[in-house]
Image (cartoon, rainbow, N blue to C red):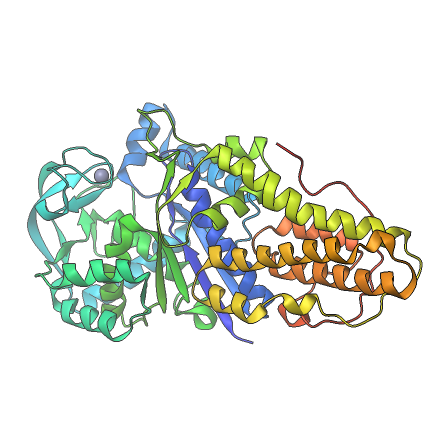
Length: 483
Ligand SMILES: [Zn+2]
């Protein structure tokens, strides 16, 4: 089979993880698990972006040395992954010496290509983003991410000849419509590329933190630039896993960093003579009860708090089902409860409970024609998964769960005996076995519990072929509790 390389953005460690971080990792995890089930060799990368200057300030405020501070903060993100069953293959930290070494190697390639030059730079700088903005990027003169007024900064630093690559990048995006998804995000970038593109500053004059510019220890590689390189440094470019997994199949990112990933990053790769990633998928932002999450409103949802009150799988399900993937979505705790009591408990949990209770009492063999499992539209599921339509995949699966419960209502197996009962149970248990496969990318812990109760081994995607059920069902605890 093939290989599949998926990445999330790497997270700033100056604050604790919020729900958006959890959301992005859950979506990436779902895609990674799906590709593994398909039999592909998957490399799933996530990690932390630790070279930002603001970590130096945050550490100072916390009265810690920077190294201790970033170690502690990175741990929060690892805990987040653990809590939500994020099955990453590597967690990169950009303070890893290996990242520094390889980022310098790539930067050296840009220098060798003649694409780096020194100049005086004056720009509008947002310390929150650690990014320079043009007047056009600002909303009412303020940073769109932070709603603060950027400072005008003037310093001597290194520039990358982004202008040289504009036409090429533009043509690439036009020729490969699937490169940036969804289409709305692609059009945003193309409309920006219709204008002139200026060269970008790629270093900061600072000495205390970050990756040193090759040949000039007075400068550090601008954090945004060296953070992008993590996708390649994590694979030990130009050797090791790089040879197996690059180019990436998909970089999963949020809206705010689209330009960096679909214009600046391709230009850097082109200059460094590295092939481009196949897809960049841009997911939306989450609101809470219809409002933007913000510290001042006090409605910031803490994913580590949530997961102490609800099962991680319920949250995974909720976010992947209710938020149309690629669009903005809303998080509402009352709707989360609806999802738990409704689809997960009354739908899936009830189905398992009914089937296993009857099967435990049944002494015969499971035989008869398997009509029910064939109602699961696997082709449709694959269609949606290949298009990153995770919410549609779940719709399709839960429609099938509805069909299964209807089948129980109609066949009334509690009134049946002998081969008639054997046939109904064969259909129900085999359908549940199918569900453990197609639901595994979404709610992995729950499908493990179902497998245990069915008494069958975990299957791969290719095992979605109806065969007489052979497990030994045994009732266990309920999948979800009513909330
Ligand atoms: Zn900002």
